[in-house]
Image 1: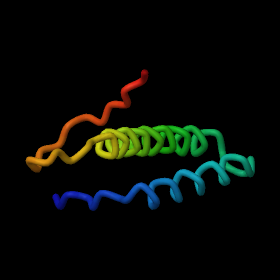
Image 2: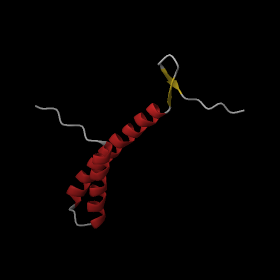
Image 3: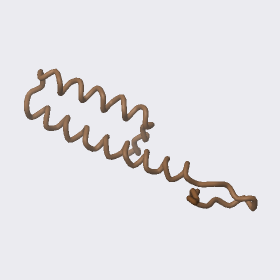
Image 4: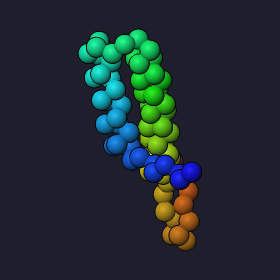
Length: 76
């Protein structure tokens, strides 16, 4: 079985928005709505993980020796 292509953050967000619109319409049978809600929660979790990873990467600083370290703001 081939591995599914990992969707980008934007693709996941678009899918999540489509599910929310469908659920808000109220035209979905209950069983389908529950399945769509479950799918939406999984997509939201994936998006949250991607955002956390991006935040961790953005909060790094490149040192003069080429290594990365955590960026820390020193308050006085």
